[in-house]
Image (tube, rainbow, N blue to C red):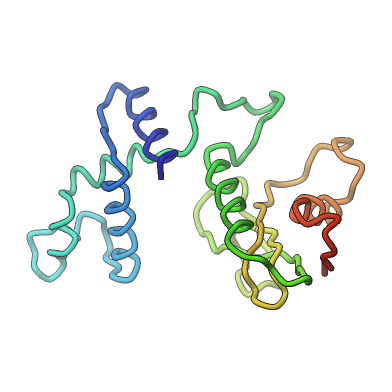
Length: 198
């Protein structure tokens, strides 16, 4: 939360705007997104509509539409001014979301003591929009989306770490196959501690 507030306020200031986002307001914003997720309307603006067939008083009581849209516009996780350009050393297709994935993986690892058996497999996160990261896998139940490699506790299914597939690496950047790289990356915190990986 602190990272999102800091980076969103920075992004707004880089665009000569004043956001003044706080953690409490960010929590309220995420709460509204959750409510909107189970009460879907055709447009964001309909939640604040004057038409009582669409308006959600619960949402309107939390924050005005203009404030919601301003937070949505400036919501950020990483400083764009430090992002390496394509072709430069350190270029990362997930640069803008990388801090979120790192934080989730750290939190996953500290939240549970897994069984001695760890399972690794790929998963598809459904996505229909446009992205260079989107994959098409015709044999999967979810055919289009982001391919995510997941290490999970084999007994509970709890996610221990994950990695989004960003595409083929350039030839010669690694001596390991893709499968070896995935297993090594997702299990590095468990090496030498007696875990069995499947």
